[in-house]
Length: 380
Picture 1: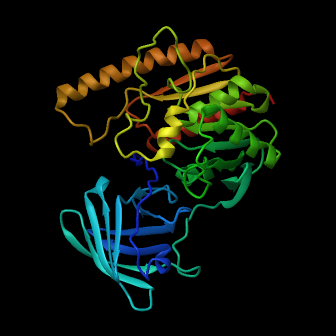
Picture 2: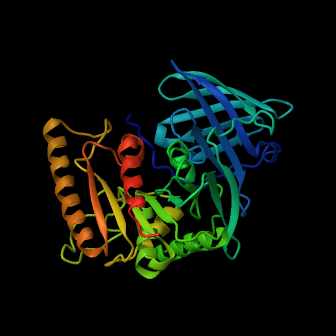
Picture 3: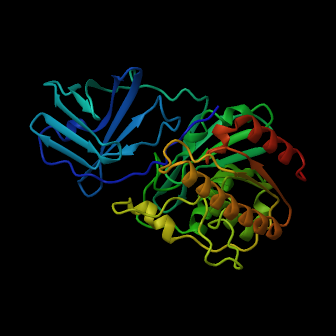
């Protein structure tokens, strides 16, 4: 089964003054009938500075319930509301009901479609179906992280999400490991329900956040399993505090933000997030600016690479261009994999052909097997 997971990030938007502004805070949900039924959640919240932010989640298309696509503008004129989401080339225009509990309007994304939104209540809110509990753990002054617990018994595993995702991106995958392990997930600062401080986004600080959660939960040498940019947090811990963890699993995450190969200083960061475009949320820029150069990882490591990588249907170019892009990505990834393996104290490289970047979704069975084999071989 192959799934595409959107890499989503928060961005602040302004909501112009209105007597309705305060009433709009919260989750609004509705079903868009676009050939298939798509459940949408629009979350509107107030920022500390009095501004507003809005986020759209299409929960039938993205398994990460806590992530969303940011609105670029939200305008309110009396009871009339309008949202623009440039990433989707979409807009929503509607009218808030007199009682403030519904919005009747139109979603336009090429074709206008009716969409009624209802204010979500404790009783009516759509629930994340994954079998986890959630709690918040303080890791720094005024910083709390959302921590998911899928249960299970045995060796603890802690999942770390990629850039723009939350721990909920593992909602479908993590429960499949609870028969042998006790499985957790952490949403890093700046995303989802975790705190969003103005500072604290260097790789080592983010690694310290993970260590603080491990200490708070009193986990004895867990296995860390991180996707994409989480590779830098794992390498931070594996290079500075290898005694804190039993092993590291890099889920298409062992690229240059996780291991710096000095012999290839001009090598692009294969599979790293794309170059920062204008309007990128400050938290994403802060994480990019906080990248560090790790040259040795002292913890046992399993690095799973998607190579040759499935570039997906969104690739722009003809067959020849696609082949050239795949060849280039494969060469860069292979060089990185060899360098990484030479630098880790004990490790294994796995290549999954035609997997996409979210290897735990596109190649679930393969990743589950490799993780189980790796963890069972670790020294207890």
